[in-house]
Image (cartoon, rainbow, N blue to C red):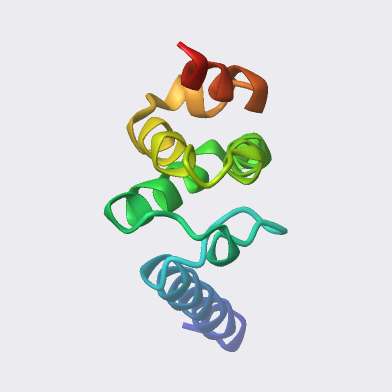
Length: 103
């Protein structure tokens, strides 16, 4: 192995370790979104955080729905988000999610 190959191997290994450590620590929520300030009800906290990660670019819709829910609705919104299929996590608007609470 020449010097260039060794350097490339070290860089790739370092990137893999960094990526794994962030995933393991649960820090892979899309950039700009903070779930710690949402005050998610305990039974749904991890599931909601995972759903937000899965939603990717649409995570803002889920967070907005949670932020717009009043205190009495937060647990219902957390339940919905925690149990949504991936296609809904990536497509539903905050208004549509909150509309389920009116039914």
